[in-house]
Image 1 (cartoon, rainbow over the protein chains, first blue to last red):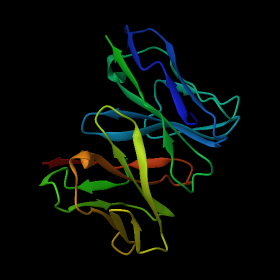
Image 2: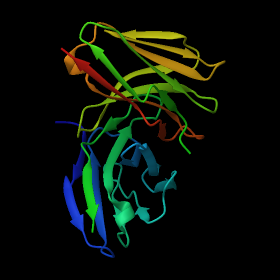
Image 3: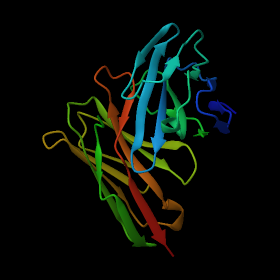
Image 4: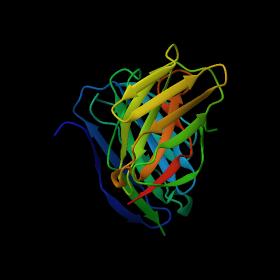
Amino acid sequence: NAGVTQTPKFQVLKTGQSMTLQCAQDMNHEYMSWYRQDPGMGLRLIHYSVGAGITDQGEVPNGYNVSRSTTEDFPLRLLSAAPSQTSVYFCASSYSGREGYTFGSGTRLTVV
Amino acid sequence: SQQGEEDPQALSIQEGENATMNCSYKTSINNLQWYRQNSGRGLVHLILIRSNEREKHSGRLRVTLDTSKKSSSLLITASRAADTASYFCATGNQAGTALIFGKGTTLSVSS
């Protein structure tokens, strides 16, 4: 089915470990973005991209890196995991940003 | 900082009643969007209203936008238990290249 696919669905990391959260879409969407959702905080924008090779920082970018080598994929890298990065992470995509976004089902990350 | 703020934070109603959620935002917008999130799931786009529109309907949903007051409301008519979810408003960031969300309204519809 067409949509936004996020992997893994669940992950437990130890403090200091690194990992990559994967996000892929097959709708030829140019706009992609990453969010984290914490209780009582809604969704906060981490990084976003408007096309291959173009990325920019959102509201809470510290501790995260992104790259966009293809239109389909937009991975989020945690360089050195910290307990404060325990959260649910969502990836979203849109064709042009002027219509609704399609969200993935999320990755629940716990850092111990 | 978050652009939109929803009000109320939580709302509990009976099946068949109407539910109204409000959203206020800070800066000028091109459009405002509403999303639904069922517990533990991803967000689903409900409706988008453009800055030159005042009202929009989709099924049992009615959205209004008042750009002079920088506010929007989402009305769900004849609520059902399946409408139990969190509802978020979102506007574009400064460049219109990503969404900025409010903290959401949690709606509980009991039968």
